[in-house]
Length: 303
Image (tube, rainbow, N blue to C red; front, side):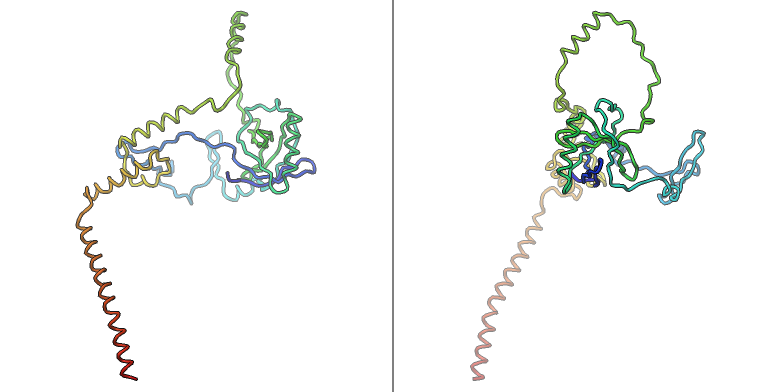
C-alpha cells in the first residue's frame, strides 16, 4: 500500500507521528459506453447550454446554482479566499462510548501506521481505546478541508473513519405503521432469529454479479466475439486470457496483411545474405596471411 497522507495524532501532550493509508478499494464491475455497431468508445463534449458551442477547459468556471435557478460564478480568487487548511494534525477532541456513534455517519476508512518514534505512543493509544471501549472523536484536514472523524481499533491497527456532517444525514419523510402484532407471531419471529443466529464472516459472502460478468466476458473472448478498434490496445481493463488474446491479435494482423503462412522468399533471402557474409569472412581470412608475408619480405630486403 502507498501512504496518501502523513501527520500526527495528538491527544493531550502526546503526539504520534503516523502515515495514512486507504483501508478500502472498490472492485465494482465497470463498463464503458460504446457504439454497438463497431465497439468505438462514446466521447462527450463540453457544450454550453446557451450558445450550443463547445467550451474549452480554460473557459470553464465553478458555478453555484441558487434555489430560484440563478447561477453565481465563482472565480479563482473567490475559491482562494475560502477557509482551507494544510494542517498535518489529527486532533483528539474527546473519547466517547463506542455505541454512541451511529454507523450511518461513517464515510471513508483509513489505516494509521506509526512512523519513526511513534510506535510506543501508538500502542499506548490503541490499548487505551480497547480498555475503555471508546472511540476518539477527532478533527483532521484532508484535501485542505477540515472534517470530523473517529479513531477505533481493528485487529491491532488504529483505523480513522471520516464522518458525514449531521446535516448531511437525511430524515425519512415517511412513517411506518406498526400494525397489530400477535404474541404467537412475535414468538415465531424470535424462533426464526434464533435459528439464523451466528457470527459474521465476511468471507462467506461473494460478489456473484462481478463473477458472472467476468464469466460472460471470458466466454465471449474465447469465442472470438471481440471488436477490434483503434483504442483496443489502450484499454486498462483486465485481460482474462492473455495468451489467447495475443494469439488472436497475431492472426488478425496477418489476415489484414493478407498473410497466411510465412513467406519462403524471406528465408531464401536470409540464407543468401548469410552465404555472402560467410564468403566475405573467408576471403578476408585468406588475404590476411598474404599481408604478413609481404611485410616480412620487405623487412629482409631492407636488411
